[in-house]
Image (cartoon, rainbow, N blue to C red; front, top):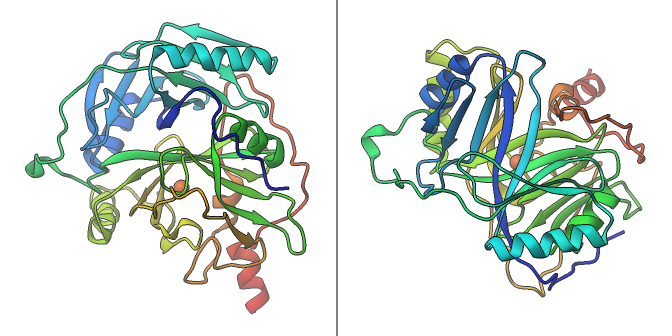
Length: 333
Ligand SMILES: [Fe+2]
């Protein structure tokens, strides 16, 4: 069922802004994200690394915290308009019966933390320290020259419940995937900032973070990221692509970091602003949905993702398998 868009929730969540991950070796994380992929290091401590895209004036869009345990996805982050809007969201969550708390977080203004209705760990942030935009320091560009954080994708056991909740928060459905002959939701692409998505939910064992994404300037730069990681000795880290999504029209490549977290580089999506524009429906059986050029993604792309700490994972309510590369090749033989 198409989730109902709450166009005026009474507060303004402006965009997906950052993720917080944990990793076993911050030196390896820095070598991968800064030296190979080209993110900017804003700050580093013994226990955390703070990175941002080249055009970003916010302090960080990727935080990696050191762990001695298994690497996890710790938080997905969004920005709200200001501190007053943090309070308004907190009141909304209280009415929904969701536990939430204000947290003291380094390099972040007022921060509201909660778990959404499907167990995703979320933090909403009012502001961050302003830093230099490095977007015209071209001589420093490396890897894929990542410009800015754009979105993340979550795997969830209940896409309908997740989508209904986020649409109550003001998110709008841009595109969705459903099994043949039904509008049961397999995947939803939801936006706040005026392109096709800030947050994506797909059907599967969840909650888990599937990937987060940075924009790159163009196709040549995206390919250069593949070459640069290769010449630095990273092998078996390209998880999928390059290719073009039917959904959202992005030209993409996905990498796995040293701890298995998945990052996407992509050329930007189309605008999705005019309110009369309906969402685009994709049939789950249509391989052009996920790869316009026709070659489906592998099983590991569909089924591997990063868990959140102390959060049980549930099997999906909807039983509907996507077409994987393995099944596709089997059918060809
Ligand atoms: Fe993506």
